[in-house]
Length: 198
Length: 198
DNA sequence: GGGTAATCTAGAACACGTTCCAGCGTGGCG
DNA sequence: CGCCACGCTGGAACGTGTTCTAGATTACCC
Image 1 (spheres, each protein chain N blue to C red):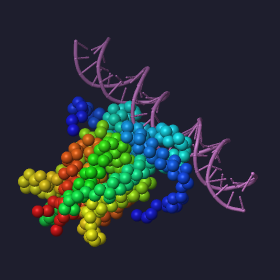
Image 2: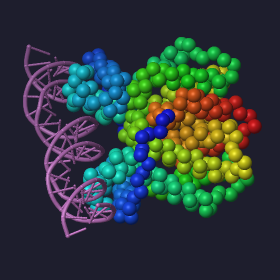
Image 3: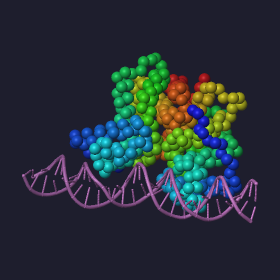
Image 4: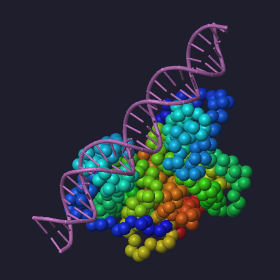
C-alpha cells in the first residue's frame, strides 16, 4: 500500500484545463452512445481537437480516461445529493435511497455507466490511485447519507465498506444484464441492514 | 433475463475434450506467470497445439477462455471444500472461514487469480451465461458452508447475495492492491453478520 | 471403402490501444 | 530580441485480440 510515485500534479494553465475538460466531455459523449468499446482513443482525440499524443499525455490509458470520467460524474452526483439530501428517519433507509437515486442517475445513460464501470473494474494497479479516489467519493456519499452527528464507529465503517462492495458488484451485475433494478434495490437494502444492527 | 440463444452444447468427442482441457491448462499456466496480459491467444494456441481459429471455436474470446478457467478452478475448490468442510458452530463464521480458505487458495497463484477476476469483471453481456455459472458455484459454496438442514429463507438468500457481492468486490480490491488480506477478512466477516441477524 | 459435412490448420489481414518521432509553436528568461 | 525548454501536432509504426480464407483432416453414414 505505498503511495504511487506521482509527482504532485503540476498546475495546469487555462488552455490546458480547457483541453482536459474537452477531452473528458468527448469521452463521456462517445461512451453515452456505444459504451466502453465506442470510446476509441483516436476518435476522442479527433473530436476533442487534440493530437493522439496529447490525449495520452493527459490520460495515460483508456482506462485512466474513463475512470477520470467516473470521478467527474460521481462528483456531480455528490453535489446534487448534498443540495437535496434524501429524507427519512432510518439511516439505513436513507443510505439505500441515496444509492438507488445515484443508480437511477446512472441508469439514465446506461451506456456511459457501462463504460465507466467496466473501466473501473478492469483497472490494474497502475490506476489504483484514481480508483481509490472514486471509492473515497462513494464512501463519502454513504457517510453523508447516514447523517452522523458524531464520528462513525468502527462497526459503522465496516458496514460502509460492505455497502460499498455491494454497490459496486450489484452495479456490475446489473450492467451485464444478470440482475434487475428491483434485485439491486433488494441487495442494497439488505446490505444497509448492517447499519442498524445492535 | 432471457436465456441466451445457446443451442445446447453438442457432445464433444474424446479428442475434442482433450483439446479443450489442453487449452484450459495452457491458459492457466500462462496466467500463473504474467496474469491477464500474459495470456496471449496466439501463444495459448501454439502451446496447446491447436490453430488459432480452433482456439476461437472453443472459446469465442479471451474473456470467455479465462472465465471458463475460473469455472474450472472454482469447481476444484468446491470439491475440496465438500470433502473437508470447515468446522465450527456459527454458520456465519463457517461461511467467512470457507471464503477465506478459498481466498488463500487464490492467493497461492496471485497472477492466475488476477487474470481470472479481471476477465470476470470485464465480461460484457456476451459472456453473461458463463459468468452466471461462476456466480452460481460461488453461491452454492456459501450455501454449503451454511450447513442448512432445511431450505434457506428469503432473508438468508438475500444475505448470501450480499456476501457474494462482498466476496467479488473485495477480491477485486485486493488484487488491485487497494486492500490487505486482513481487510478482506474483516469485510467478509462483516457481511456474514447478516446471516445471524434477527 | 466412398462420399460428404463438419472440423482443424496455417497464415494473412484487420482493428484499436499504445508508443514513438520529427518538427512546429509558444511562453518565459536573459 | 534571441534563445531555450516544453508542450503540441500529424502521422507512422507496433502489439495483440479477433476475423477470414483456402485447403487438409477427420468423423460419420451408407
